Length: 326
Image (cartoon, rainbow, N blue to C red; front, side, top):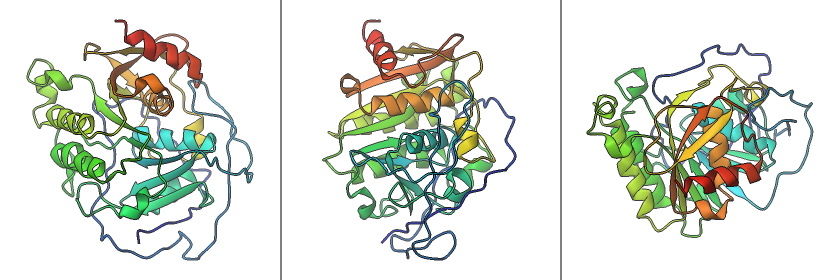
């Protein structure tokens, strides 16, 4: 059985002041044995404590509420893959705030302690696993899962992020293929985070970013999702801004702000060029889970100056629908 943990809070850690990154940089899981024991971050069993927060991840700063014991939603179970990365952290924090049941696959389950504080196992389960290996995911992690958000990734150019075989080929191709191949056919939706420019990786300036294959392998991952027979939505992000965060807790994540670039531009056909806040990408993934007409669609997304949709589902529906007419 894969490992499940409860995690304990770190509330007063320093916050990174970094605002932009040239290329998506998400931590990725590494290979672990398919069989491992159940443990908690305190090496005890049943040492869980509930916490809830008062604000969803929006473009404005919010203040978190004191801990409470609100029950988790029972209508949806979302598996987040890449939940320790720049986009994944925001996805997890926002879904926890929405009281959605979550599962995470992480190479180091105890990392969830620093990221999200201690959560009741009814709300958050963390599993040890590695999407890069066809045998690196315990099949039982998928039991009861209704939706998946995959936001794994690595740097476009060689860096320390590549240590441990975290190259674009292993992350964006092998990882996505192995994950999708293992998903149950009963899944209601998988949302995959990809990148703008994936259809133009042989053209300038995209060919420069693709020198080590990142766009090519992301496109291969996209195509595998499309051909899987699973209900999907693909979100192609522009150059990512806001974060990634290096020291945080739920309070920090829920106070993140996109500054003046809160409005959202959504397109189709791989025509958009620009930047996008990680906050916006995370919210787009969450909204796409339940908007029926986004199934089977691929969207590009950017952030632009102005007031944004926040967490308003009707506004997101309008944005997604408008892109179909362009």
